[in-house]
Image 1 (cartoon, rainbow, N blue to C red):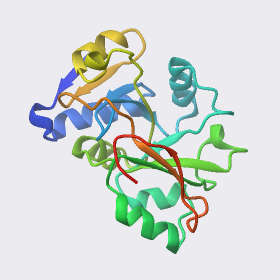
Image 2: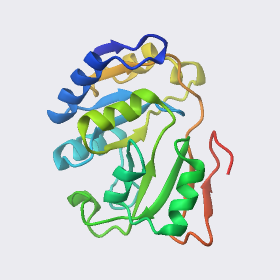
Image 3: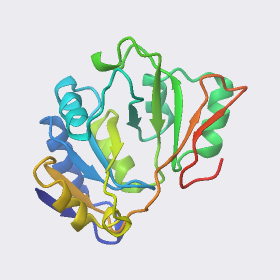
Length: 200
């Protein structure tokens, strides 16, 4: 596995370009967010999504899939965001939240038959820079390691996933908690699905 170091969490354009090239090849990357480190792939590549789901043991027919976007403009291409939902998103994003929204027809085949998608806009410059440079979202799921000390360490994460992921972006130690998940498919009655690192 290739490791790209981002010293101090600062965006390195050359490393971002290499990571984007990997995503465009259908590779699986690991990158920092404002919560746990995440496994990610090009959200519009069905082949890459299938590989990512296999790595994580996800059944895409039964589990919520989430995409990371660089902002609300990108998010609005893949999720239906009305004025009430927009106000909620504007208040909390960027931040360590996953908001469940109705999906649009721009989502790839794996979303067909699903009525919702998780939307993330992390408060992390590296994550958002990746999406901006790629020009589309990254399908993402948190890394899974039981040891709290190892799950924050890029070096430990790299060892854990060395045979399954292709590239890791080392942005320094991560967090030990996942994002907070809120269902706003009905913006008038938000439902807290999972209390994570951020309050809601």
